[in-house]
View (cartoon, rainbow, N blue to C red):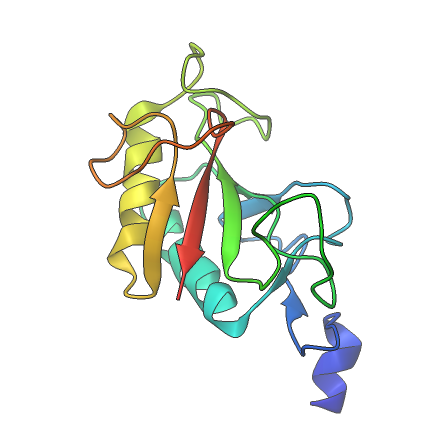
Length: 156
């Protein structure tokens, strides 16, 4: 454990920060504040993200964007959620593969790929809910205010 703590930051809950720039990963990171300060994940969420990353990489060369998870040590924040490391924001997939936000109304939004990514999340048994305003992307998503350019995933 001592060696791991030197390699990957962790907080008082022993939640590790999502690796920020793995070379061959199928994801990229974004969020506020930058530098991974809001990307500490419960072990269940970390397991899901790394599993989804592997499954996604097998079918698509574009990377998906992983945003806010939780702050180090889980203090209160501006979100009603994202406090326990069991929720994550994921950007909708862009047709051009750029690491930028895109709403489901935009021309560069790839509905089919976003639906496949959501499907991969739902195929993991720990995923309980996905909130996203393009209900055509996947039949199990639920609409939620301010979720036009990303979807929110919850795990148990």
